[in-house]
Length: 514
Image (cartoon, rainbow, N blue to C red; front, side, top):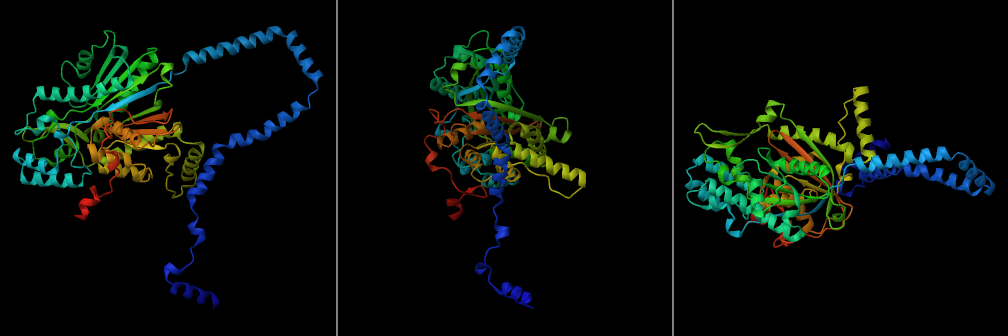
């Protein structure tokens, strides 16, 4: 009777006047952090009593016992010498065979001039004059409005002309302007002479002329004759991480040298002028951009380097036909060339991400997260329980996330699936807003954003993750060596005070209020 009265009274009490349910309101985040701390320091906690016992026993040792031990070693000199030789040999083998550390000395992102900016109204006016159908024009307008891009992104000079001039000469001019602009800033900020560069890796997916882009750089900066140069093409937006991986491998072979990685994309000859909707999306998202990165394996560069490269994990789903075809360059029914994006793209990206983080997890996650993941997996297998798979908390492994700014949907999905906070994806959203999808270089604009905000501190761990055609998902992990200040000529230096901007469905709030 009393229980029923209490229940009816509780039901009648307005929710805002009830006492909180303390059992439900326990913040599991702090319980998890405590568990994480316990498991991470478990070995230390177990060793402390052992060390205390050893010290206690050492304090009780008689000096005569130490003298006897010394005499015993003298009479077994051969054994001592053999043991010492084995230890020296082992240490020598370890030093000679261990991977050489790779340092990121600095990087530079290209910022186009203001006259190349393309407001939405101008974009739509040019599109209308280029002969797109009304249906295609309306589709592009909707994509632009929901894209998360601002009206300050850039398209190349050839696309501002009426009619557009997608010639080979203009495509070369775009490539030279972007690459040389980034490299000029890089060499100026680091003080490294072009002749000191021993490895050059350039990646650009859709523009691969002869001579190659890497040859254009060699010619411009008069790089030395024995330089190891590579030109990566057709590898999509994740090729920047692939280029870093290739440069790292080369630095393991060639001692005391620098490697330069240049990541860019070319729009001039890859603008789509047809009406197929799946091929119109790149027009609305891709914009001009590029980055140059200076890597070194020289020990003397550690003191001035910003980051050291810890891991690169690459995942390729090209064996699956759907994955292979989901980002595909082809001609439409009218013979117009463009890049088609499949409706299955996000699902395929999710599968590639799952494979990638499954490989990356054991390399970076704390033991506590790995144990939780393993325990959930065992329970699911043994008891056939309907247990949701445990998603590791990558926030315990990284302080900063550079998620490829491929579009709002990509960022939204990773934020949701990795259980990240808005702060973790801020750099990606703001890069998409300010510069658009700059393809493989977007992860460097994001890192530049974090530096400009003064958020990158010594000891921080950074995860760069990108997706690309093929289909690929690639990750790079960096460790911060010092408190990082923004590089000279940062692409954010004249606008960082305006960011972050608050977005609602990809549109700044001041526009939605209007």
